[in-house]
Image (cartoon, rainbow, N blue to C red; front, side, top):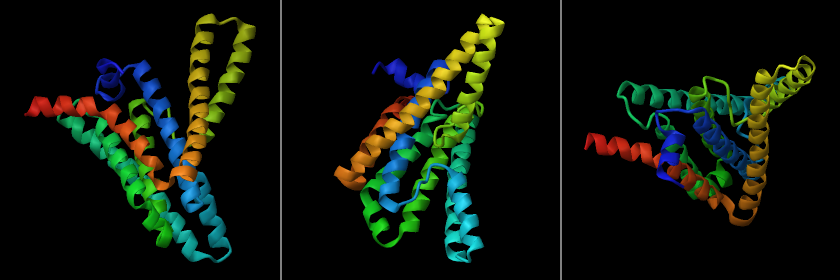
Length: 242
């Protein structure tokens, strides 16, 4: 990949193209980690709707411990988003180029940790594995949420599928009204949303196959990809402060 392209993915100077491409990469990573994580611990960890619903069900039937486990998972996701915000605010205050790259480095390290010691966690401490993955997904989701001003999210599909339905409704209406400028904008938004859903799915298939054939180490290529995308802004900052 050209260096300017990699710098544009995670550097502080943002473009719509860079945001779209980064979102697509992260949707793929989220789908892969989510599917592989499910095979590891039998629980999806990229979205909170199911976890909170399970908490309510477990509490209703008297399974307080399972409800508390769900609460811990939700708090781990929240903690990941919290950490991303700290990274971004800290880097912004120091005018660093690695504004959005630092959270990706942290995510990569967590995926490496999961790949190397996940088997030990899953064997005797499933909750530990769930917390690690929820924290990682919360961290990632906050990255794209912040840089897109809450327009794009990559770790769960409910909002994206809803937005696709809204975009299709607008397109149907605009076809009648013949609003060409707005029509192009809606088509671009629809293409982005559809690509995010598709890449989450493709990532899920690859993640599931990776875990099936390789085991926990399937996360290592994902981590290497994240580090590649984050490397140049971090190197730029290191050169500037050396």
